[in-house]
Length: 240
Image (cartoon, rainbow, N blue to C red; front, side, top):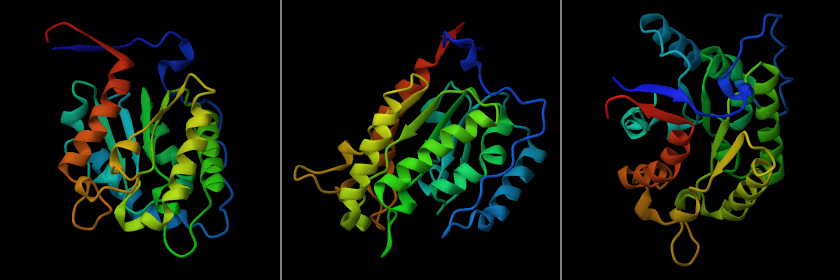
């Protein structure tokens, strides 16, 4: 059976080391945010863990419904062990706030996040700069919790159902990509460009009927971008 071995050079990238000291306090809840609405989802994850313990040091995929609905995730990332911690409708601050229960408790070898899409929607979308600052907070929160695992950020998708927010979506992606380029432990995956048509508009052919969530072809497009980065953190030895 194939054995997965981390190939990242720096010792700090060996994953999340659980701090011996008391955990840091939860972040102050920002105005307009309500992370406690996800308590039922967190308890459901913990019930799953009690029934079947997750693989040690998995690659944790975290974020909103596009992660939750990625039914082929384990197959798409094989042989890398994955853990899906997507919870539909979540925002980026929710992931920051609950990082200890969603991510670091599993001592991940790698974190893959798709979050921020639900912040840029509706009549009062968050500005791109606000979303980018929450990305900074997510990185800082993970490190404060003792997690030095690399972080892969999947670009916010330009969707037909939220086409009016396209400018903000692309700007948020640009700002987050700039941040990732300054840190070898952070990786931005541009999954957004391929979801646009020849006119630079969200292309409905990648989405299901709600024009928000990816169809099978959309997930295949994501996989083509995300899988190589995930596999790059590993080498596979033994039987193939």
